[in-house]
Image (cartoon, rainbow, N blue to C red; front, side, top):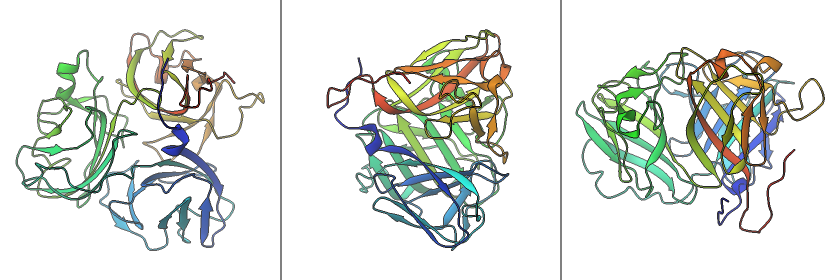
Length: 355
């Protein structure tokens, strides 16, 4: 059983809201978010990412390769229990429905020792309890390392060049057959592309419990400024892993050690990035499971309700409920990232229950 000394809702929470077109202060997140990902549900729109390390109003797109943009009327401030939105239509259209995914990375803002040369970390926020690190850094064309200060090996890393139109570069520890080979490949959050050889990205090396290895290409370390989000496995709170598709209606079960609040799935084939959570409305049959309301991280599509891409959220993991190749292709290696609603057993001794 998975035990943790905190409640997952203190470090991750999904918040739904409806736009007003006027300034909107949202509460109920439960903490001051340091990383917020907003996606419109009832219409096409970009997915916008904000973080406290770069500062409010600084937006980047999950589904695009654009440089960072300053939009004064986007997410205007991070607050003690949520955030405030301006009138920008990307996040706050009147009658628009939205989902926001929120992470608490508040912890040490001290730059870890060893980050004295390229890349140069300008600012950071490191939460070792929840295994989340955010780093804004600059680089100068040479192979280098981020000393991350998390104390555990990052299993999933997302990096975006802030100055130029470059694809996202994502590292996942289970992208290949063995951990020793994981550093040979990278993923692009903003595309459907299968993993590619990353000799110019993560330096053909894995992350370690002290560093994230980088090479000198534009998406991660060429001359310019970057943002990096790094996540470690925390038993009972987060899990980054892989399962294999079997094309069965009652597909494979993925054990997490917790009831999930958020799951993102990406096949290592040419497939979309699918996002599921525990807060959006029940499916067309009126039940929580199968959970068939999904959004795509790499696309502007509105929320889709599709039983052919359904999963079940269980007390200790999730189960695939479709034969669709997108998330259950025959023999396909399929990656996931997941955050908890409730561990199997938490610090208060209360067990998770199925829905």
